[in-house]
Image 1 (cartoon, helix red, strand yellow):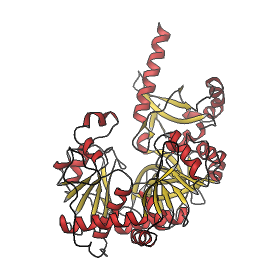
Image 2 (cartoon, one colour; image 1 turned 90 degrees about the vertical axis):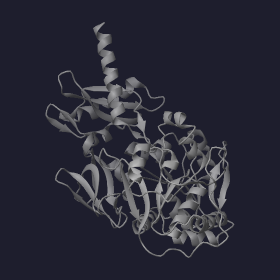
Image 3 (cartoon, helix red, strand yellow; image 1 turned 30 degrees about the vertical axis):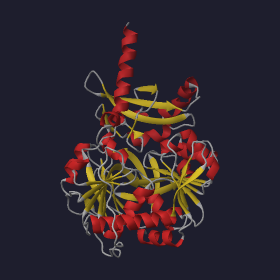
Image 4 (spheres, one colour; image 1 turned 120 degrees about the vertical axis):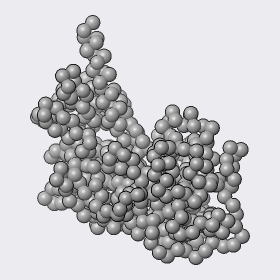
Length: 491
């Protein structure tokens, strides 16, 4: 897929490849196809000739999503390098510990990443962003504009880039919390990365000359390789809505937090990387989407399953319907009900560990008679109340009524050493709290022995770049709210 992308960029040199947006939502060209191809060529030549990188070397990458990051990925692929993505959300201790297993021969960083790792560290920590001192990881070179605090720029090279590397091997290392409490580094091979991108291409089917709105690598590469133009989503919801209005994209891939505020959509809409309930998909279609799909994906295997709103809304049993496994994805359940997956797109291994073709998702699930995956929630999110194991994922989907933005079930320690089960429901803006409480009575009653001890209306804390519900923070918030209400009642 990356080889196909390189050819497509060369053949359509004058065509816009990546679009940004103004504050008014008007598109602006960030890079044309020829620009990207030339930039990737220059980077590859510099990395090979000026910095001496060879197939199998590790390249640390701390570059914001955009043309430069994509050009770095293409250059690394051409040379057969292993790209280690230095995510500032992973935490500096994790990066240092894991990269000790694969020390970077060079770290490419833009000025923003070097600021986060240096003078702006105290400010960045407030946004839960942190990087270790980059020079402690390896030699550093700057890509993009260079400021006084930056390392030397990536050296130029007079000789052309070498011929593309044809073998297999490690392609990318991505740091993730994984399926356990210990953060891990996911290693994808060139073969698994290509298989994942082919799976996205078969699922989304981007078309030449059309516009795709999305920012992840697994969306960027197949769309650009097919000859589509990709618009990177604006960060602010109001600007993102104006961007959608102006572009009217054929395909849109956003995370649920990005999608929720939008009231006007076009074409087919895809969402994943965080829980996407049926209510969210219904709202997307009400906003104008011709189809609305929830995609189940992991860093270890992207994508794994997908379901359209119509099927998800028709599911009236317990749990969250994820849909059929995508072609090539095989499933089985562990003894504890954990969902295990394997596919050509599955990661090769975790850094420092032996290869394992089965991915342990950390999710508890069941398979219906048609082979569809029904999620019952995270194994580690289980709440133990009165000796009964309660899996929140079985019951949370029933709480997502039209006036509900988000809903989670969390365990809060009780004075007697047991846990209280609390439903924290975040209303949609403008929802009447009294009417919402009344509407929630029916789904709460249907939970039987898993019925919550308390219902609280309030904001659901989010975490990480994908803005998933932060269950530990939600539990702390609920505990504080309940303690405050007890204190008020006592006085």
